[in-house]
Length: 100
Image (cartoon, rainbow, N blue to C red; front, side, top):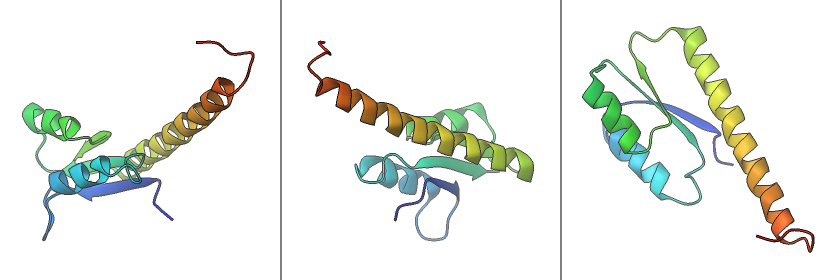
């Protein structure tokens, strides 16, 4: 079972967080996972890069636990709502009543 969300650091011992985010988002089976990158690098250019590579959110250290939990909860809820919408849209497309 795949996780609903991943909170990872930009700096990791083997594979950096940017490469890991790219790998997750490029795999169709994993692309729906909500990815948050956490790092001490808070510059605007680093944030932009994080979003450009596919991160869904970006936290700057030190991380406040309640804030990170709220972001994770919101991200998971967003992903679940997107999946439900895609499922319902698919069933509407199969319906004779719906026309594009």
